[in-house]
Image 1 (cartoon, rainbow, N blue to C red):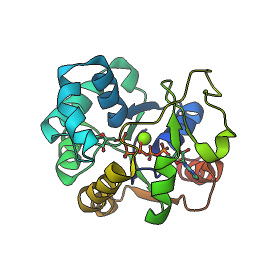
Image 2 (image 1 turned 120 degrees about the vertical axis):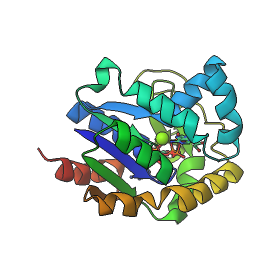
Image 3 (image 1 turned 30 degrees about the horizontal axis):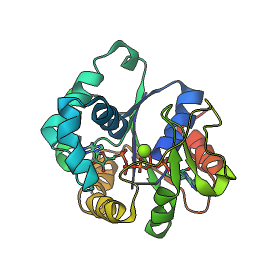
Length: 207
Ligand code: AP5
Ligand code: MG
């Protein structure tokens, strides 16, 4: 099964992707993670992506679509995957339809008022886990692998405002795009804990 995880910045795409990967054994492909790894590695793609990510804007479609198109040809993508953060505008969705078959678009729906605190309070680990300061009880290391947690460079109020604006103008229209294809499922992530959101996702995915 091939799934898109749609949702605003901070909606919980990465959090749920980690749970879904554990239970359903789907490969997690996050374009944001790919860009951050390229920035850390000092690659050409990283150099292009950095200024856009710092400004809360989308990295150019030509760069992003090529990365995803190539990643889906790897062997590990043959048994099903989750796309987290792609597609992010109508052009990317139309391109994706040309090189992949998508079964389901899971929209994680959250009130915008909750997102600023979620993102600015987020602490992440290089292993992919993500936490919120309110549940860390002062811990500064990852509960899964023990490495030091850190804050993403784009998790500051000014960049978050720009990311939310980009989401509302460019990404939110994809909800209707996948609804029209009969592939949309919506889960609510308001007051519910990550586990409660995951329960809703399991109902959609079955077993
Ligand atoms: P990306 O890395 O995709 O970031 P994003 O979409 O802004 O989403 P986040 O990773 O911030 O949030 P999330 O939904 O994963 O939430 P999480 O689970 O961590 O993209 C970064 C940048 O890369 C973009 O701005 C763009 O520049 C570029 N980019 C990426 N893809 C691109 C593309 N396709 N085209 C062009 N450019 C692209 O959770 C957030 C916090 O909330 C955590 O602290 C978590 O613990 C907490 N939390 C999660 N669920 C719950 C819950 N149910 N209740 C309470 N707290 C919760
Ligand atoms: Mg994420």
